[in-house]
Length: 357
Image (cartoon, rainbow, N blue to C red; front, side, top):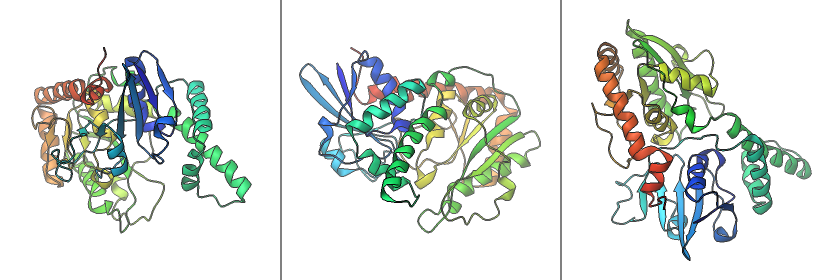
């Protein structure tokens, strides 16, 4: 088996699958633009081809926040995996290639030296990656300086995705959750006329933080961190703001210690990385209703605890879980079992029809 990856594929989002693909194909993994020449840039997504027994199977992994299918890539591929599949908008009968995946998250899948060498090789194979950096880079300079800035930005992103993430194995190191400690640190997204986050994700996260602070048993740590860009209309948010962020290693350790965690549809009502991370960590998840589909629905009282979009419902859930450790442990066990069956890189490839021979 040979795997050919589009060199324009996302570093951070695609890393979750690359390590498992490398294992499945026994290191016979290559980057080449050839099978993907007629297709455009990828953004956060990933494309690859598996060659086996003279047959090619083309895969497109939709890893961004939107549920909308990219029609050109759907026509090109044989299997279209999406971490934000929405069968109400894209019925399975009309889109038979569409496969629902559990939300993935960025992982460190190589050493820093290997990551930078791969970044250099991919840039040589696909110079148009600089075009994408030009869109990201807002520094206005002369043409020759701008080119340098874009190249610097490209390698900077490659390095940051290595530096800011950890190997998947970090999610397996079990730390027993503490009875009354609750840790929640997340983003306060910008709000504007297109992304009305103050009415959605920001409000729901604020409700949860306020609910935690109102429960006497709850020893709460965390809050919301302001995102770096966009128009900011976030009102009445000071009481839920975090004093500081956390390095990724510390975030994982404190999340492991937390008696429960909170999930809600995020930007554009996507699943978000945190849902995948919470399942991998085997956490007791308190969540509002999900907007998109999963390979198999999460079940209230089995592997998740669903609440309404209001502070009172969240407070009741927090109080119940903190005073019923057996129920908490049941949800923790159920979340990890769900992850192993549907969410891990190995399980994700199986959902896509890729199996170890």
